[in-house]
Image 1 (spheres, helix red, strand yellow):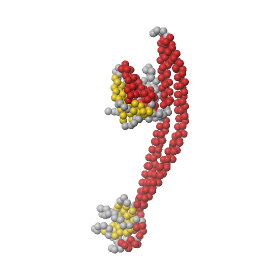
Image 2 (tube, one colour):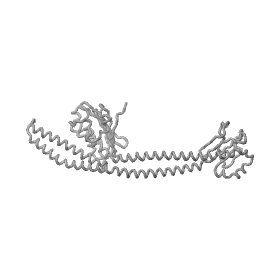
Image 3 (cartoon, helix red, strand yellow):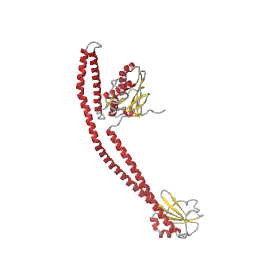
Length: 418
C-alpha cells in the first residue's frame, strides 16, 4: 500500500541558515577527504614504485653473479652491511632444495618461493611489512634470487602523511566554518532585520486595532439591544456588524499570538498534564461534533506530561480539533490519539474530509492559506500556522499526512517533562 505524502512546516530562517552551513561543511568535508585519499593513494603508489624500481636494479646486479660458495654467508654479511642498514635482504634458492641456500642483509623469514615459477623471469611477492622480487639467475641455471625490503619506513611515512592531512583538513574546515558563518550572518542580517520590523509591525498593528474593534463590538451590542423585534432591518445590520467585529477580533488575536510566537522558544516552560488538557478540549468539542453528526473516536493515554505553557497547549489542541471538525462532512469521523514514544508525547488528530494533494501539502502551515477558497465558516487561515509556531516554541514537531478524498492526519510530537 502506498504511503500518503507527508509535509512539515517550513523551517525558520535561522534554522535554514544552520542547515545550509552544515550542508556546506559536509560537502567540503567530503571533497577534502576524497582529495586526501587520492593524495595518499598516489603517494603510496609512487613510494612503492620507487621501492620496486630499486629492488629490480639490485636483482639485475645479483642475477649476473655466481651462486655464493657454501660457508661464505658471514663474509657476505660483513662485506655488504649496507643491505642490513637499508633493511633489505637477498636470498639464493636452488631448484629442488627446501629453503634458501644463502642470504645477505637483514635476516627475515619470508617463507617459500611462489609456486609455478616455470617460464617466468620475475615474480613479485608482498606481505604487510615486506615486498620482494623473485628473479631467475642469468648465469646459473636452476637458481632463483629473491631481493626484499622492509616496508616499515614506508608505513611510517604514510602515517606522517595521514597526520599531516588530518591536521590540514581540520584547520581548513575550521577556517571555512568561521568564514561561512560570518558570511551567512552578514547575508542574513538584512533579512532578519526585515523580519524583526515586520514582527514588530504585527505586534503594534494588533495592539492598535484592539481598541477600535472593542469600541465597534460594544456599539454593535448596544445597537442590538436598542433594535426592534425579529425581522427588523436595523437588527440584521447590527448582527452583521457584531459578527464581523467578532471575526476581526479573533483575527487580531491570532496575528498577535503569531507575532509573539515568532521568538521561537517559550521563556519558562512548566510541567503540564497534557492528558487532562486533551480530555478538557475533547469535552468542549463533543457537543459541536454531535451536532454535525460526526463520529468521535478516542484513544487517549492517561498521565501524559509535557513541558510548556498550558494556555498555548490548549490553543494547539483546540485549533487541531476545530480544523478536523471544519473539514469533516456530516456523518464523517474524527479520530484523536495520544501516547508516549520515547522522550516525546505524540498527539494526533485525523479527519475524514476532503484531504490534500501533494501540491497543497507544503502550504498547509502557511499563514492565511486554506484548502477551500471560501471563508463562509468564519476561519482566518491562521489556525494551523499558530499550531506550527506553538510546536516550534515548545521544542516539538508537527507533520501532516493526507490524500485527496481520504482526509488528513496531523501528528504533533512534544518533549515530555519526565
